[in-house]
Image (cartoon, rainbow, N blue to C red):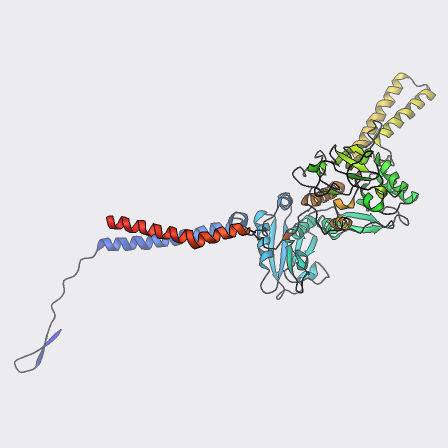
Length: 548
């Protein structure tokens, strides 16, 4: 509204002319409404996608890009998880910020199997939670696996391997998968296994690697002195590990009696390089009961493709027909400083023998190591392919008291023949008696059968890297195939379906080494070739634009 002066000089208001109404832009309105609708739909779609992705197991949504695959579970773990029928809760004890590596690994377990649930427990708000399962002090970032009434604590300190070689220490390995999988296997298993290892004959101590393997397989270990004790009734496996002194005759008889009544045993003799063919007649008596004879001396490999670095570091031929070695066809095994065997393949034997490992046909034996002037093959050295490790099985009836079924049936036939002659029974009665005996024998075999299992190796270096390092006086380690051979042996002897044999994963960062020539070439490319290429490309583009 404008103010104008009138005739009397007074201001008068002059009304504004009304503006014309602008027509509504229907196109803009439609476009705006469409944009708002599409935005709302997009937001809804994103929410739905996030919801769906959140429900997808982490094995399909998360990817392990670490060089060591620290968050990836292996084939052994997957096999155990695939066979789960009961639910397992992994209680992750936290206090403050949880360990990221363990947390991600637990997510992998939970994402892989519907039977595994991860539950985070705050120790600050629930400090007595662990006391329901153990009386030990449990640190933060530990895990308590629970299935029904069974539980097992995975201590945080056992999931990392520490390197103390310098003034400060750091984590050199991560064993989270091995420890967690072992705990899951333990709480879902109803069978407890116990291994007794003999003492009193200057045996080698079980290495930390071996005890870790037994622990992961949930096999308890205990010492056994056969001089003062019999083999306990709860013995699942008897182990004789590299004795330097002979057994007494009574001790040897106890071992034989245990085996002849369906016992399971792993026997590892000391390397000839250490005992120098010391005579051990009673120890040999245990082996000869199952057709095994030690040939004496050190066996060496003559085929250059069948050893590494030295003829006594053999890479043996693996017979994969046994359950112990069936998974080792693509694995390397080093069998160091071993002894050759001779096996009795008599048709009258009531047991079966399977050669697990053997040399090539170019191997040879140094019988007298004290007078051996060289490790090279010489005239007079026995040559051929020799067994290095053997598996023995014998099936027995529960009432046979150490006598095989073959022997039982033979004895039964003899007894029944004698009774038949003495009593002069008729042919019909004898036939009926024979049929009845056969039926009862069959019933006994099917219901009460038990199996003797024996594994024999001729050097501790096949399982013990410390023993190998000491014998060759150089720090070394064993291939993964040796570790798997031990795990398979445990599985076989304890009648487990799967044995946890997950190795610790190195946490050292892999380094790529480039030789000096390649380094210089890369430097020249960076300093000269790339700038020249950029200049040439710029000139070409400039010329083309000028021509246009």
